[in-house]
Amino acid sequence: MTSTVPALDTRTAEGSALQAVLLDMDGTLVDTEGFWWDVEVEVFASLGHTLDDSWRHVVVGGPMTRSAGFLIEATGAGIGLAELSVLLNDGFERRIGRDLPLMPGAARLLAELTAHDIPTALVSASHRRIIDRVLKSLGPHHFALTVAGDEVPRTKPHPDPYLAAASGLGADPVRCAVVEDTATGVAAAESAGCHVVAVPSVAPITPAARRTVAGSLEEVDLPFLRGLVTHVS
Image (cartoon, rainbow, N blue to C red; front, side):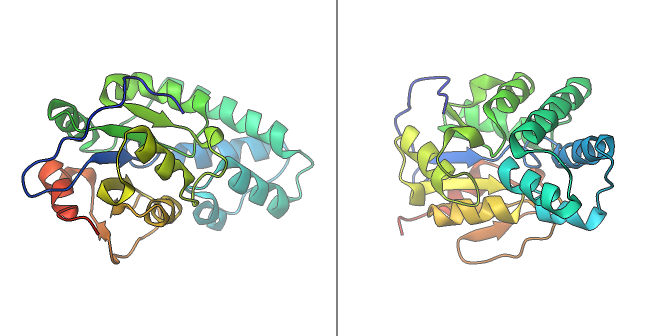
């Protein structure tokens, strides 16, 4: 877990109990969920295996141990998890080095949160080496804290990453708003007790208690997020 600036005091607007905003990365801020699948297809092709497109919904949004482990088992590829993880991370780094598109509304939302001094964390299942590379495009100054999937005992769908982020910002999880794009990330945030905005990237996500579904980040701004946390549960 890496903090880019000292932990901030909580600041709330009148009528809102919002203390912090916690943002997923792949598929939420950067349009990279498809990149991961492209790299997985490419790596397994080099191993002599063809991936079934239906598996894409199984591996999306999860930790590499789960997605890579599933693909090894599904294909019967003769490669270990550690070796495959290196190949996938290497391939992904090469891919984002060529192009790293932000999701519509991402730059505007980050600028708005920064302008209003909202404590904000980047919380990803991706490894630290990937997060640090992506941060160069997102702007590290937008985040008081970043949490990588290889820095917590259990990553998404477990609550650990979001509990770590809230704790690092000195915030109560029930007074945090989370923005996620996959069911795996939503499950992690909800298990931590946070209010969740789901902006689905690959598979549909349905509304639920403490969960709002938006069509894109262009529908999400600071008043929207403050409106989610109007009282302490």
